[in-house]
Amino acid sequence: MQLTIANLSKTYPNGTQALRDVSLDIPRGMFGLLGRNGAGKSTLMRILATLQQPDEGTARLGDIDVIRDKPRVRETLGYLPQSFGFHPKARAERLLDHFAILKGIEERGARRDAVEALLRQTNLWDVRAQTLGTFSGGMRQRFGVAVALLGNPRLIIVDEPTAGLDPEERVRFLNLLSRIGQDSVVILSTHIVEDVEELCTCMAIIDQGEILLEAQPSRAIAGLRGKIWRRTVTHAELDALEREQRVISTKMRAGQTSVHVYAEASPGKEFEAVEPDLKDVYFSVMARHHGRRAEAVA
Image 1 (cartoon, rainbow, N blue to C red):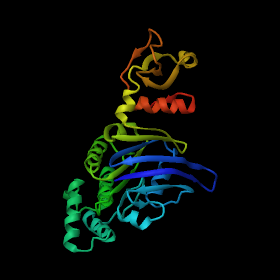
Image 2: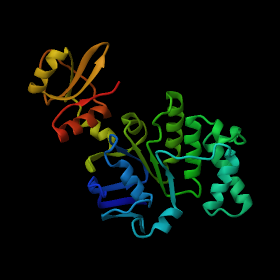
Image 3: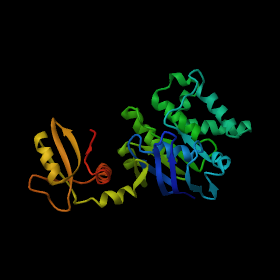
Image 4: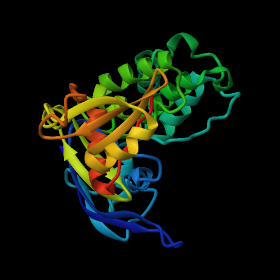
């Protein structure tokens, strides 16, 4: 089972080209789609979730034509959108039971078992009688996952799931995602590099509607080993350095500017070699694509 996307393009009526000839092979397991806001991630997710139609291209989940056979896709789809709302006065267990009916789980005993299993899996069983309005942001996201997992979907899409979560809730949510990504195609769409680095065995970087890189994170990181160099500079030195070296990112550290440079060999005695991570992969790809460095976040 894999999801095969070929030559998808989408242009909105205002002229914005959200996707440009996107092709991806997404295997079973956790796949990270990494890109900044406005890169085209949500458009691609909505097309795969049968909520939008592309202008061109195809997508197949096994033997299912995702673009032309939307009812079959919806039968096996779990979707957690970037933003969603539930009635704040609805109790978690009762609302999940309602969604189970909508998903086609009609037999009461099977539905009861499915609801209990999912509430336990998402660590919400002890608060099953509480209303959604009393849930924290992380609890609501976990409830959204429970809804997405109804019916044992073969394709699960989660769009920016950790945005706005505090660190503790983020870790709890990522642990949950890691457990569900065993038997299905799970697409994690995010602008947070660490989410992809911690969870995904395969990934792609998208920007301005184009796929810039498709790789295994570990191999992409290994490809930069020995090529990322760091130096602390003043603001006045930065402009000169950018003219001389391939600066891929800058970051403030203790009031000073820390610069990461891509170079096949040491750029000078002022630089130290650093072990690359997925941020270096992302920033080097973006810098190569745009011809300029990226502002790293702390």
